[in-house]
Amino acid sequence: MARKLTRYPVEGPNALWQIYRTVSPLKGVKNFIFIQLARYCPILPMKNWIYRRMLGMTVGKHTAFGLMVMVDVFFPEKITIGENSVIGYNTTILAHEYLIKEYRLGEVRIGENVLVGANTTILPGVTIGDGAVVAAGSVVHKDVAPGAFVGGNPLRELGRAAAENESI
Image (cartoon, rainbow, N blue to C red; front, side, top):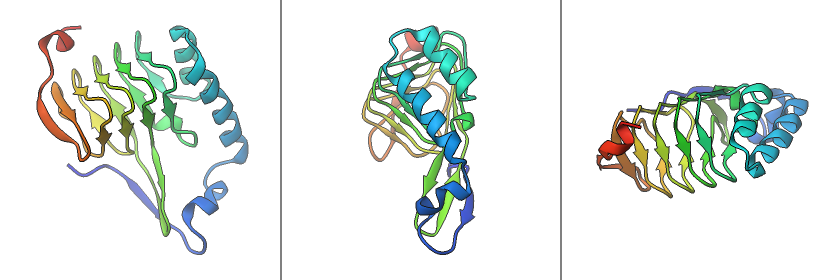
């Protein structure tokens, strides 16, 4: 299934060069500071507090972010993560893409009891269903069905998630 993105064409220099026409510079700086604090913070409740209260993300109870997770700096409020999920070390979650002639925005929805392996990149506009497992080092460029085990670049289904992950 195609990613759910809203496209915004631009004229003139590339879209990234025009970023502050779409996002306040102060929002960018504030978000950057709080994201960096969260990336290094070893205290899970404090991390989740930063994501919820300072960045406007929706983060479920007992969700755990590994060290160095990088959430979208400009649109973190477009990220939703369900309860009891694990986002692995150094994962990047993007809700925007700035290209040459356009920029794109898309909500990222990660379900409950989802395991995302380390060094994964999640692109804007995707949904990862409840109980899914994403292998380390993957690029999530399309929706992931509930209970699926996926991995790679390009992303492909590798099987079903282990029963123990689904029953967490």
